[in-house]
Image 1 (cartoon, rainbow, N blue to C red):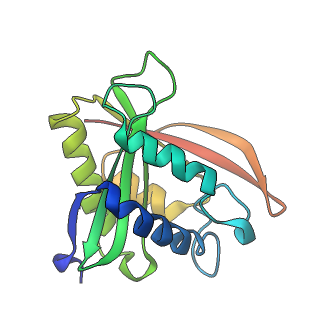
Image 2 (cartoon, helix red, strand yellow):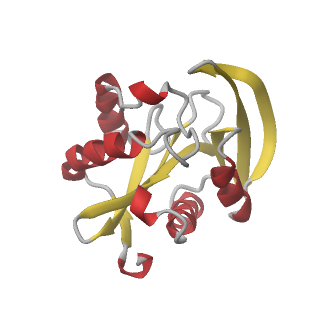
Length: 180
């Protein structure tokens, strides 16, 4: 199924469809057999409208400037099957690093698409952006994601115990990094 999926950089005109996909994707957060993957209550798992503006602005911000962001979409025809984004870290002395965020739509999980998305972003980070490190934070209960990141060369760099209290659960955050 994923062999027909193409990965390409997102354009401004893709963002409305991306935000609709993202809200559908977030509706799976911690439901059924899907691990909690975003630090938000299960019933409130939506992309906040106020963050859409920051996302749009980040896409237009030049690489190396505070707040830059780049997004790639995995497309099966016109259907968004997954996404990955890299964004500037907020600290001024971290221009050589980026933060990663990603997701795969429910029908495309466990088919290798996550590995392909990470590969595309890592290649861009190294060859084009000259970034030396990609960092990420993942809920420690999200073992499928941690396994994916580990298989793609990310190494655990730390864990913050009991960082979140969501739906009555104490949840930790795992930090991971990959040298490009």
